[in-house]
Length: 340
Image 1 (tube, rainbow, N blue to C red):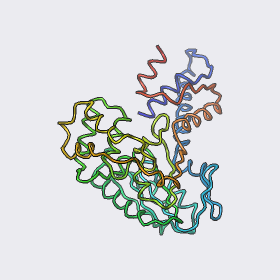
Image 2 (cartoon, rainbow, N blue to C red):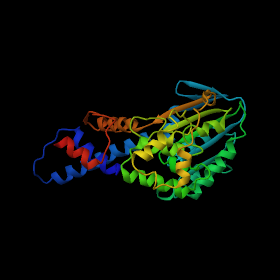
Image 3 (cartoon, one colour):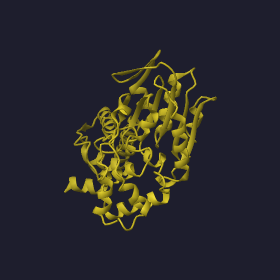
Image 4 (cartoon, one colour):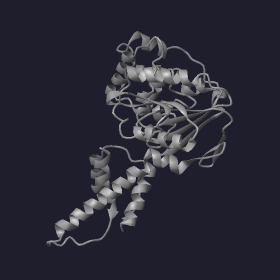
């Protein structure tokens, strides 16, 4: 879907004058154009590659971890956790940055993503990599990984630093249904909402209410340690509270929001009783003290990919214009709309 969309949009919005004369060189010219389009696409992908983003945005100077213009002092232990499709590449660079110190950590990543990057980790790496979330859906492995992550960080002290790597797919790789809810009940609820037309913000409000880690609850577990999250956004507009359902972000939802969404779509008698019990339970607002030492950084997003494509296109002689970084929808529909 991504490659298809980028190729089509590139053809529409990049302009490099050339003649369409029917000649023996026409086929060769078209072939060259396709090669250029491929190079532009690859530049866009490279711009949001996890390893490249860490190299560009994070550095370590003695006992100072510097993320762009923010400095975090390292006084004691540094721990690493991560969840999502791109966190392996991010972790490779973070581990290399801290050598010869051995970082301890746990990464929860989608099935099938370990093979290529695993050899790039330190031979004696203490970062545990665990796969889960087949078909981009939370499963029992996701829940097991999340429990391990919770246990790993819950004893951190105020002088420790916990680095949290987050990317697309993070919500499926970090899953802990609130007791007594089963994973099946939670998945059924989300599926019913999707089928009823609920939007992503509504889905995330419900996900957070049914979870023990989403909606800032991971930050509560990490407290009183300093938490630094490095995020690759997969949502237009980069809303922190919605990326992976905001596990490190203060949840400002009203306690009744999630319940009202289920009622809005007439699902209160279709979801399990456990779901409605949890959604109907009045919960206090989160204490802001848990977020005093939380620092969330978006280091990559779709605009970074667009800028990477723009730079490459211009180096090839194209005149480029970025119309927007807020376009949403299927590539076919978007392109057709601009053509029309």
